Amino acid sequence: MRYTVEVRHFGDDLTTATSELRSWLRRQIIQPAEFEYSIGGPGMTFRVHFTGRSEAEAFAAHFTVG
Image (cartoon, rainbow, N blue to C red):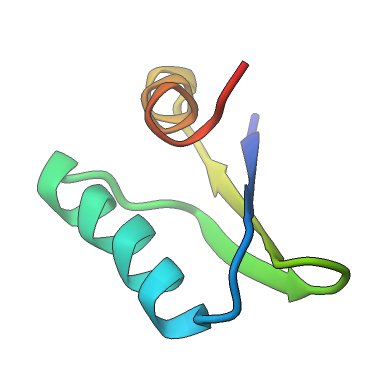
């Protein structure tokens, strides 16, 4: 099973936004199954897929508001 977390980033600096997400993953020693993004409207959307539920929940807790 895969768990997907979607993160919306408002801004136009793809390199900085990607670096922030990937740096957090490295520090947590988490390897996502897939990392993708799309640009449209104001900002960009990242979709990060995990094989473990706890990894997805930790990522979502850190990067999503809700």
